[in-house]
Amino acid sequence: MSFKRILIANRGEIAVRIIRASRSLGIQSIVAHSTADSMADFVQLADDAVCIGPAPASRSYLNIPALLFAAECSKADAIHPGYGFLSESATFARCAEEAGFVFIGPSPSAIEIMGDKIMAKQTMLKAGVPCIPGSEGRLPDDPDAIATIAESIGYPVMIKAVSGGGGRGMRVVTEPENLASAITLTSEEARNAFGDPALYLERYLQKPRHVEIQVLCDNHGNAFWVGDRDCSLQRRNQKVMEESPAVAIDRSQIAEIGNLCVAACQRIGYRGVGTFEFLYEDAEFFFVEMNTRLQVEHPVTELTSGLDLVQAQILVAQGETLKLRQQQDPVSGHAIECRLNAEDSETFVPSPGTISNWQIPEYDWLRIDTHISAGQKVPPYYDSLIAKIITHASDRDQALARMDKALSEIIVEGVRTNLPLLRDLVRDPDVQRGAVDIHFIQNRSIET
View 1 (cartoon, helix red, strand yellow):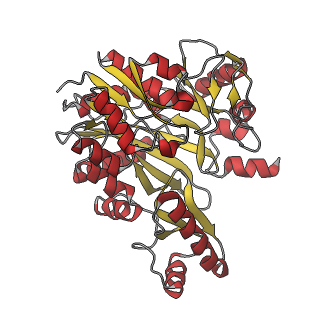
View 2 (cartoon, one colour; view 1 turned 45 degrees about the horizontal axis):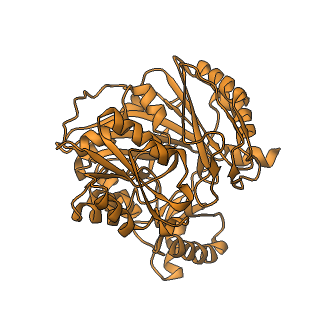
View 3 (cartoon, helix red, strand yellow; view 1 turned 120 degrees about the vertical axis):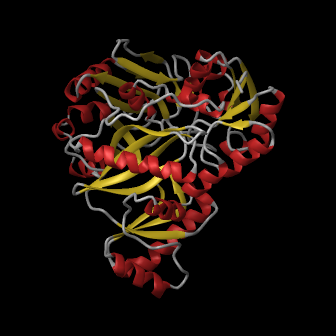
């Protein structure tokens, strides 16, 4: 089937990205938006728009009945969830399909399997994907039994929420005497954030890098890995800067893990785009989780693979067969992405307000994904991301140099941004050497 109209159940720069991909395929887009976003540029850019509720996400972007009503009254054929919000909600995917709409993403069952961290880990082990040593399932209620499991894994351990995501529901324990209180705190956090207090334990790796494998699958059993990314530069478990390909890892090892990810996708009948997240330490990969959606950092893979992943999502959802061949190494050149956030660069406290001055450079090697222009408001209710700055070059040194140039020419006034941090990072000697791990920004802040 061919879609005529797609409802976008999201906001901001990803809404703009989906609008443009839809338009390139001759498909009209409808944006479902909150009252806080009524005058936003991305709402004006869409072919149609439906207000679904007040500013709080719980009453708008997370309101499944309102989103389905918007899809129905706008005569949409399909719903694209973007990333965040309900993009990894099996309930939303199932409700959308039961209401007669195509969910542009994996099947509800695949989302459930990979959204449950224990089930995902067990699935990956069966597929031969290496995983971090940890508990075999959900932790029991007995504190003594939990202590025994932790001792068998070895300290330090990481407590994780079974239904967690986005860096939440996680806590590191270095000493046995702190385990019980940490379990109680993390369980309550998980209950409040995800509605599920269940936890599990994993070995805490000391200085790992965060490496991802991007996969793309259709409904006909075809699956491919189309790129890898290094996302080690993070703060509070939130990514700040990403690049493709990963630095200083043998490409044959990347291909090996990529092929294992493809096999895992075929095992569960996965469709659409997805990302396998790994920690990489001492030349070993350890599976962490799979994101069953489009990633914020998908542009670096698009630039190094030559693919339009959002278009591919839509085509797969329409039932089309992917016309790809698996390459030994599908990555060409080097791409880097920096997340420009409306936040204090030192405290990371969000900085909502009105953009009074917005100046961004234009180069053929520069891509900027944004929903912002001068005069636009950055509301306090949602994620602080206002733009993604992406450079592409034949090699990493040139991509970094281009990123340095682009960041030096960007002017944003009216709100505080993390531009100072981004500029410092691309000039940091350790970043330039690729000698970083997931604790780099945190340790750097402590040192300075």
